[in-house]
Length: 273
Image (cartoon, rainbow, N blue to C red; front, side, top):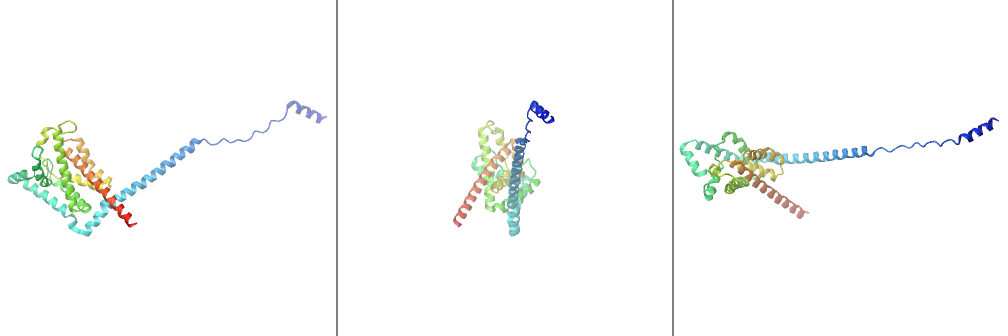
């Protein structure tokens, strides 16, 4: 009797529903994508850090260690050019303080935009050692000495003089072109032709720029060249324009010399192999 009632109740209610399977939803792909982006950024940061570290070590070796070793090996002769240039600047500064000396310095070294170009060529070598009238001589001696000492140790005596004179002369010629162009198109006004153009600033910044380009030394360029570039754009006078031209010319020489050096090294390695 009980069994019949149970079967009748089961038929009335119907079959029991099947158990629902435990289906787990997959994790959202956003987190995985975010984690992959973070790993790529970290990998890029590590690669960049290693690259920057290698570059800084290479620059420290070529700008500091190798010149110091050369100085230890050669002694005072390794910076003799820097000593002579600094002494010449101090001597001409002292001579320029007297009436007769000032006349002699003016006739032999003063360069302006209104004098003939052949006379500029004759006066340019000596004009490098005459301090600019608007700048004191003594505070610039340490920078002058450091620049020519580093250049002689890295480039050699002859190449240092060639780059220094070439950068200074390029600045002078560039200034004359800007005077001819007039105040438009980044030129210079006519009154700038009467400004006395002396001093080793163009040669100094040109040497620093040349070494930085040749040795792939961005820190040296930022520390020794960029302040001059910023001042030249901030105060666009005759000296500033000459500095921009000297830097551009010296960098071009440095990049060309570096390319020739790399090409020569590659050919020697190919022949050796």
